Length: 309
Ligand SMILES: Nc1nc2c(ncn2[C@@H]2O[C@H](COP(=O)(O)OP(=O)(O)OP(=O)(O)O)[C@@H](O)[C@H]2O)c(=O)[nH]1
Ligand SMILES: [Mg+2]
Ligand SMILES: [Zn+2]
Image 1 (cartoon, rainbow, N blue to C red):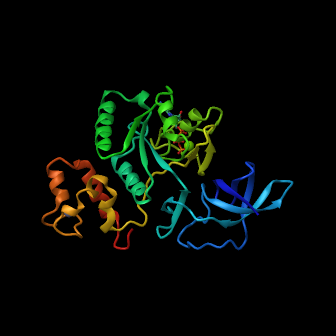
Image 2 (image 1 turned 60 degrees about the vertical axis):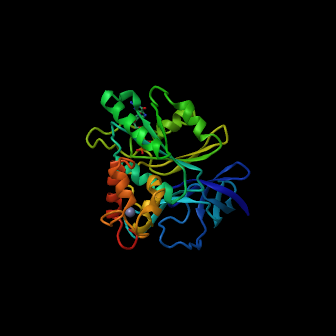
Image 3 (image 1 turned 120 degrees about the horizontal axis):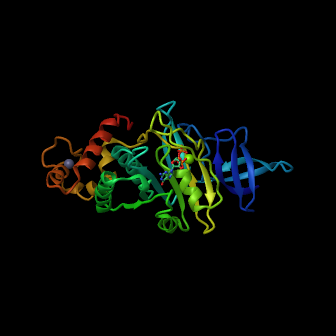
């Protein structure tokens, strides 16, 4: 029996790196026990696993057990809303790669992402990439967003993979850590890894003209080692991020600027909509909570069904 970490998962086969530092192509043992039947994938990138040699000549192995996960991020499966898909596990932080142009990342998407990270207790950093194509208008929006998010405790970066701007700061942030890269298709996640990991040569693609959203170039999540010992996980771009497993009641706990004020609401089950004596709504009126963040809160609240989603 050997131990290792999953570096790539296609759903039907896997790449694992053993503690011997060698890479193996792996599949799941036939009767692999799945405890969590609401997940579409029993094994995800970042998982620590046990495996056995299956074919020594071809370096093929069989995954026999999954070790407990420290944490994970998931999203609702696009094909079945009752199931969720585990994107990656055992993470130290999550970088949201956003863009203000070609394609445009909406504020709503950023806020949903931040809520997910808060719910999973994974620190989040927001990176605005493609600064080289921002004009005055976009730079003003960037400055506004940076102020808004920094005020509530998130780190915000401006980068350009084309001009290699901000790369050192990124390397600094990633040092020693397991970092997940997320964001829409075409924002530059794979370009970022290519830039940080010279010679990585991950396929990237022009953002398609017709949709403005980009064609998916990366199709499966994949982990890469950095010389510093850090690990970076590239993921396929996501168009939509669902909030999995969060109830209406707990949503405001995942907005840091609201969390601080929750005890001041008159009702302890206040959802900050029409209740009297609501400290959150007062803070919005006083300009202490940004209106746009409150709008995101309302939109997400509305999208959560009575069962959590
Ligand atoms: N102008 C400009 N273009 C960039 C920058 N970063 C990436 N690009 C371009 O944006 C396009 C998409 O980049 P990718 O790295 O493939 O994007 P991705 O996020 O990995 O996309 P998916 O794999 O589909 O999720 C490519 O044509 C890149 O060359 C940047 O900082 N500035
Ligand atoms: Mg990619
Ligand atoms: Zn309230």
